Length: 384
Ligand code: SAH
Image 1 (tube, rainbow, N blue to C red):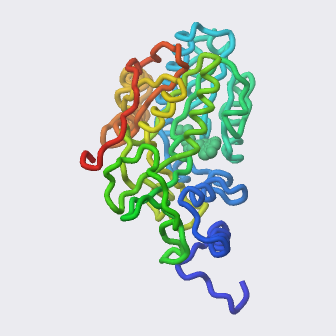
Image 2: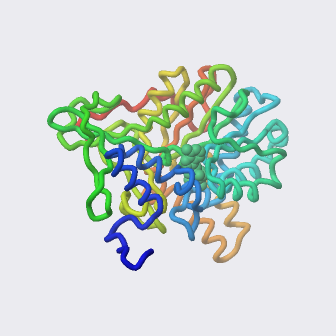
Image 3: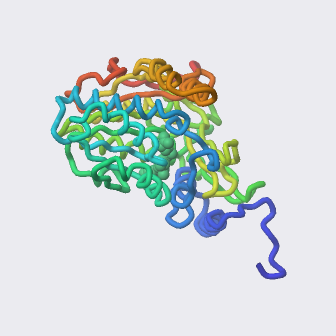
């Protein structure tokens, strides 16, 4: 910095923030979706490209990092799902956004109870983060015969598949639209304000966003997640020709509704989504009704929904917890129980997190998710 240069007043201190300021300065406001995409996925500075987001030293913690029981039960779910498919000789076990590889390591260990499944299974990880790919390799390298990494689901060879996505969809960018007195406008990021960026409105009127309530009030925000539609389209391509079952677990809502759910987390605390671009985790609630609607419209079947509590209890969380606690002593046993409680406690992760399965059209009901679901529809403004 030269002697005359002044530090930015309350401005973005990140290199990405400065690049975004230049971009907006030159070409005008960008949509929230483009801002979120840059913050998370920018090739040089994006949050998921360069940072280690998970764990106590990171920004947030996920269910598999809370308790080994989470991944173990999902491993048993995968074995039973494979059996319900008729036990094909080869099954691709695919994980979208595997984080540190903890869920998959626990799942594979639990599935060693079914050597025939393990023999049939090949492991395919869809991950864009180089630091996390390295973590996954060290967590899983010694367990799986062969692991392959991909940037997108589309790159994986066709074949019977089981897909796991825990806290993956919430990390995909959302667009936001605002109801105004003269129609819908895209919510944008503009220059100015206490963080050098603030929210504004796009100039061009937008059509009613798909799934938005027709009786929205002025100022209401509705969110769309185009990248989730791409993932569903890829599941549909896989599921149209071969057995496919995808387990989606995330936090979100079962009915499409208005609301601003964009949130930033840094070092386990809520942060301003516009501050420190590239250095905070940005996520937004998953609209399960929208996912289910897209999946059904592409010919797939949707099962559930259950909340995480009901799903894990139905797979045997309480029994597994007692078994583990009985073989531990003192503090270790208390930690096992505390971890399991955190996963299912309604005040913690038990009810905010929802579970659905999306399967190929001919599939039988997957374990614990016996109800077919045709989506939660759209909440009228007056019902929210
Ligand atoms: N499933 C893990 C991690 C959740 S965090 C767990 O439960 O612990 C989100 C994960 O998705 C990270 O691994 C992140 O790097 C990955 N991710 C985010 N956006 C992605 C994208 N567009 N394509 C592939 N992976 C992505």
